[in-house]
Length: 219
Image: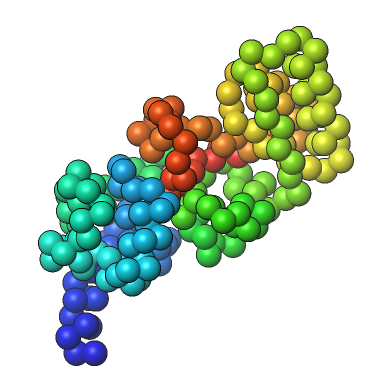
């Protein structure tokens, strides 16, 4: 216990004097920055915590140059760069400036239906009226190159679902997605956009389970 405590305190020191970051627990802050690293996937995160332990142990392995090789040299380098108090302060300061909230799996605002999925993202970036994530919801998705009929049907369904008290979820793409979002708003309801982007803002080159997902909630 005596040998573990000083190391744990040294990792907790990464999160000191963060200000806005203090809205999250120390463990949540460590988890959020870990998952935000470019190249960190859900599978890698799960393997890390299974093989090493909690996020405190994971960060200790990174700071002590004992990160497992399966992470790859590029990701390990990125994580080492992140392991500083200044990086944590800048990271959470940027989130606060942009009005972005981060939802971990144990957050009360993390969508329950998504949590039941086997590959649910470890964290969600959310912006807007987050309370919509706790409302009954239904997804409407479809092709970007939809016909006029397809657009009209998407609009009709979205408006009816809103009138029935549901929040409409879609992917914020052109075509059916855009029609569903706009119709939900015009009907006076809320809508949740889950864009298919990587952490750096680019469209994913291939399908894989990410450690994070981006969500915009509008009303």
